[in-house]
Amino acid sequence: MDKKDRARKAVSLLKEEYPDSRCTLDFKNPHQLVVATILSAQSTDERVNMITPALFKKYKSPRDFAEADLEELQENIKTAGLYRNKAKSIKNCMKTVVEEYNGKIPKTMEELVKLPGVGRKTANVILGAAYNIASGIAVDTHVTRLANLLNLTNRKEAPKIEKDLMELIPRKDWIIVSHLLIDHGRKVCIARNPRCHECVLNKICPSSKV
DNA sequence: CTCCCGATAT
DNA sequence: ATATCAGGAG
Image (cartoon, rainbow, N blue to C red; front, side, top):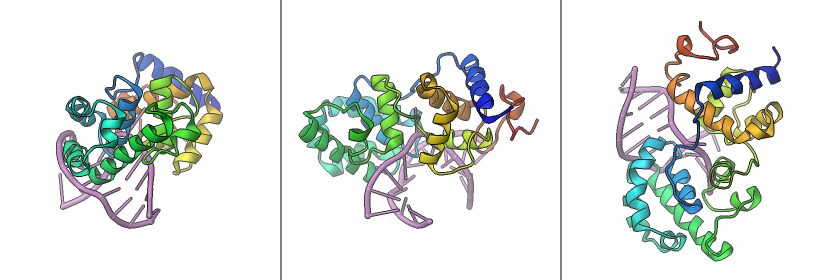
């Protein structure tokens, strides 16, 4: 089985396993998703979702975040980790959104990655989850790990992995594939202890220990 | 490449 | 004790 067959088979099997796979960050509008996604760096969605209800009650608009007191914002997001960088990113990002985009989150990759604290991964999440636009594939730690284990790529750099996956997977699956790999990375193909015996991909995975 | 960083599971 | 968690900037 070549890489393209393996990639498409994996997507097919994971769709059966996780029929409701989707973004697990809680948000009600695009700017909330931007904030939640910035917060999710090197943290879990579960932890971010514990913070955001109070955060979004306190800061209701992009302007509220743009005008936030930095130290106060830091305290409000502390438990997500990397809190000084994230507070600065959120404030500067929303400042740019207010000043350059009239408070609306842009809908193109080119514009999104210019926002402070927003890289390709975050931009892909926003485009996919908020606007249903498949501009690329969101590559996070789980996607990096599983794509390598499945030998869909042999690169460690996120942009290279994204390019490799985009060549193997049809565009209609670009948004869902990240969610599928992340769900599977959390529940079965766990970083520290992969449960190959329980894995629906163990027949096609070159790294399977079964 | 390093740094940023608290919470959780092992 | 240590690895890991929907990364991005310098």
